[in-house]
Amino acid sequence: MPPSASEILAECAANPDDDAPRLVWADLVGGERGELVVIQCDLARGGLTAAEARVRRQR
Image (cartoon, rainbow, N blue to C red; front, top):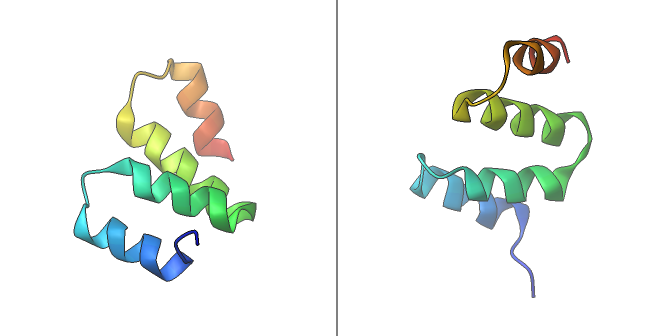
């Protein structure tokens, strides 16, 4: 049985430096909340061009 959203959130809290559980949770919940988490992870990870970062911040 796949983990529940609350189990994934507990994993996020237990591993604050690991984006993987956050991205799993984002995929699970989807919608605007999930998209926000993906964008935040992208921006925190870096490596984006200035234009890519600007587009993500505008979303």
